Image 1 (cartoon, each protein chain N blue to C red):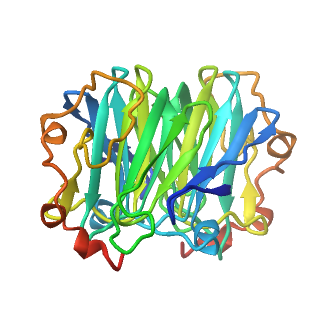
Image 2 (cartoon, chains in turn green, cyan):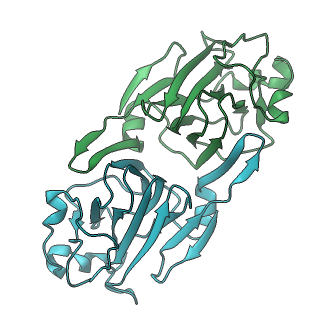
Image 3 (cartoon, chains in turn cyan, brown):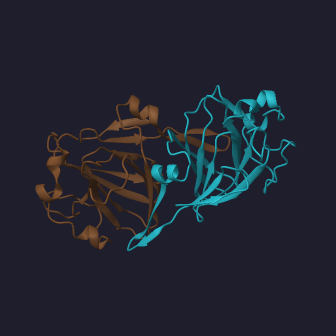
Length: 187
Length: 187
């Protein structure tokens, strides 16, 4: 696996290195040792999978506050995702900055999302499937969200007419108290 | 996730429990806590991915001896696998028994393969992709294989004309010494 830096400190794009053989190809998409050797999180406790029928389906942006801030590794199994993160660590040089990566069933890239980042995606094609690893258990009490079109961030989503859950459509405008970002200072 | 027992002691079929929503569905496909609550392995250190262009492609059957005997959780992301395991634990009531499960992109089942089992599959359709978690690092010194058509086991593969690597085609006839099964007695 190759780790490519992004404009946001601590966030990486992970590129697999498939080896062709008589039968097709084989690739390692996660290795605890390679992760920790690169200074990244190596232990993941949950793997989640979502299927999205329509292009323009939006999930996010989500994160967990301490005591459950999580690292995520997000991949696209089929179709295409525009995968977006926001740095919510108050002591980060890129605090409140966002960055997006296109993850597709063909490019096989993964997005390594550090603790203290909100994460979401919009699907660019119908029948898009996402798979992601999380380093902490889902904890509804620690869960927070940022609304996709919050003017505070001005994320340049590439598609309109998002199909979105009521919960995700209604996250309040960014507010440091509701969003608890002070708790992410040391994360 | 639901855990279904199989005829081989300690091997399970894992069935996800998708929840539909406005956008498609969401499902958890791995949870360390659910695994350990069920008495199963909860820590996995590598995730591997293979693509197989043709129906009738066979990979396996592989296992690792101590000190690296591994649990695997195998899923099919697209296409269809006939996924087969052999119990190589000398102290097991089902020693040398085999069992197979059809894993497809539609049924979303996973096969939990305990330590001390050889594992392999044949693809039932073209363009079949497999994803599997392993509880130990790949260790070439500990790796062993059983030949798919070894008469000792008489596995009833559902398709003929297997496309197979030279390495997998040449594993020797089952022999307790070469295969090191005594080392799997306590596994």
